[in-house]
Image 1: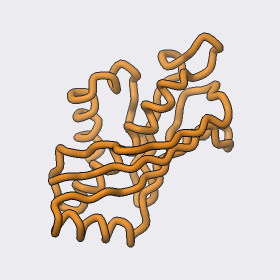
Image 2: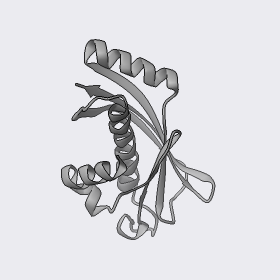
Image 3: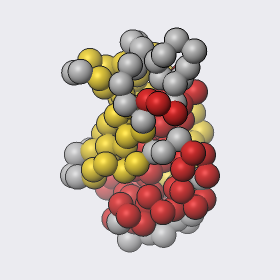
Length: 146
């Protein structure tokens, strides 16, 4: 499923290809997405804030897409409706974004709402971590419609 997602991102969201965003891993706990610093750099030699924001938003969107697929839905209508991003430290190496999978209860509720209302919202958290320290905190709210 991650290969399908990688192709979807590159074909349908061209910016992801330009930023060289890559799906590194997906497991029962999280989605990990990476991007090279070299092409996402700012004038200070650190990761550009716009790139960091984009990566967290894309990673959380991607997790929503993966979860909807796992639940048996084929939604092409996933949108972000609100987000908060805190930039805590500069990113000086290749960017690694960790997007935490919501709890079993949250996913169960999402499934129930999608089955009954054909629309549901979910909160997704991402972090960009470098050398064990959180550089960026992201909280996004997404709507999935069938």
